[in-house]
Image (cartoon, rainbow, N blue to C red):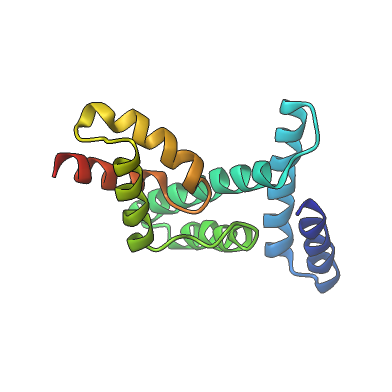
Length: 146
């Protein structure tokens, strides 16, 4: 996966696509930082985790820029989200996430909010990088309260 990112960076460089090149370089720098932090080469799961974190940061920043009426900066953040997202797994639909929540609650016999931590632990492993965990948490609360 890292090789694909490097190849995309080279293509953007050759094409003179500065915004895309900048976004890819930022992603590669974050990957290199993570690689140094853990002390060994990154797996594809590590790349997805870093990419997911960056996408979440960019989306949060875009929301803040929009609140400040800085659409130009928000657009730049959302552009970076699009560039990074091409290396992330396809996001799950809400219906699929809801099914996973019901299945996890059933498998763990979770019936109250006290079981939320166990359910979220299982879902975190299953859905990492494929679903917004804030949304998953809300669905689990809804299911357990319901």
